[in-house]
Each structure stands twice: as structure tokens, then as C-alpha cells.
Image (cartoon, helix red, strand yellow):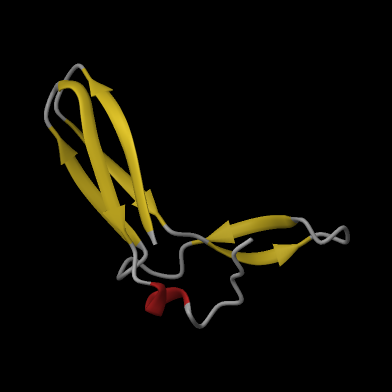
Length: 73
């Protein structure tokens, strides 16, 4: 799974992107609680230098989330 976004940063910064999995759904089958099982494979941190239109891309292996019941629509 690859996620890309654009950032304008006035100062050097760190950004953290977590891949969360659903743990609990309410009676209407709507996800209520998400969590990150552990840091390895589910969390990526990026250091950004100050600047405009910075392209940031993170990628998560689906092998890490294969043990959870995740579906794509």
C-alpha cells in the first residue's frame, strides 16, 4: 500500500504515518476503534526539510496486515 501527499513546511519537521487496523465495530457495522499493532511494519517516520510542495511517499507491505481482516472497496 503506497500513500503519497504534498506538504508545505516552514521549518524542519518530522512526520509519522501509522497504518491502523480495525479492532472494533459498533452495532451498525461501522469501525469505532483503530490501533497500530506494533511499530515494526506499521509506522513510518519521515524527516522534512523546510520548503514548499514537498512530495512525501510512504509504503507499507500488505504482508504485515495480512493477519487482520482488512478489505478494499
